[in-house]
Length: 445
Image 1 (cartoon, rainbow, N blue to C red):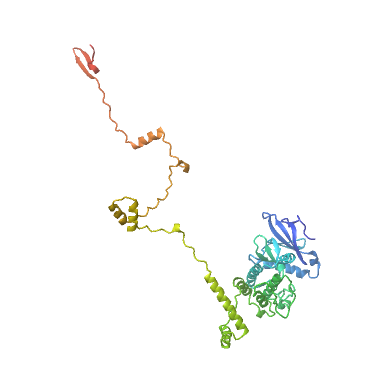
Image 2: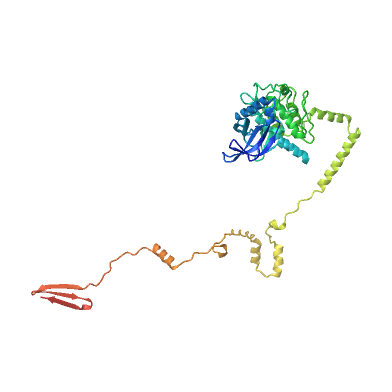
């Protein structure tokens, strides 16, 4: 029984929908309820596959895929998050790639009759080859053995591709490397004979590139390399595909990195026109010179063309537009000089003393007017937003207090009355001389 939406697997993973279903298993989108409801992918094996006579091989392949993914750490390879069993079924929980496969993109372009985006396809293949370089650089090298457009997904968030379905991935030289597995049309001849190696993945990349460019799935070919016709595409890609899909592995690119370098050179260095050897140019010229001018119909046609070109060149030179003179307003005029005739003519109409005429004739030209002063904005204009500060009585008193020095304190002098005390005659007499000469006497005995 397959998983259904809203079903809770292992009391943790809630199934959302089915993403892909194949002959042996299905892939579901799920939510990890114990990890902030983060999205993930759950892969299971079908009951029919488990009930078949190859159930042992299928379960082993499922387990091998989990081991291959756990040991890998690359941005273009989904990471394994969990491996669990429930009701005698095995599940792999891995990173969810939200997007669609390159196979779906090919089908969409076929329906819309759109041309393939060649440069973007080449960039995708360069990224794919970099991923294979990482796989082949492991100890021992990991061979994917099932590279095809259906196993290459494009992440809708980043636009980058990711290589999935590592169920057939094996370490080179391992016990299961000799198994005949793969997809017909993308499999290298040696892989069909159970002798897969890293250059078998290079063959699959060449077949995948051909499929993406032509829109036609490749057929099985065992005896010759593939060289597709790519009309409308800059030359060079068919040569790369041919070298990658040679029948013998030794005739292919030595590694995925070498094929990636070839695609980068094609992408960043457009094919230039081949230089014509100097001997090939000099030989026809010498033959034409020895034959003499106008000795053939071709020579007469060339001579006529030269005459027409010369006439056109002369016409263009004769009718070339002349430069317009500069505006008189922009050309400074010289100060006019006053000669003797002008002075005599002016003297007939204007009565001036002779010395004044002489002084006017010898007078130097007036100096040029001084340049206008640069405009300095005034901040006293109220329209500019400036307003003088208001002066109040308190402000003026405060300014006077801090600007004027403090007065020196002087003790006031008062007219104190003089007091005279006389003690005699058996008593005391006090006399006070007050202001105005008033005398006050008091006493007692």
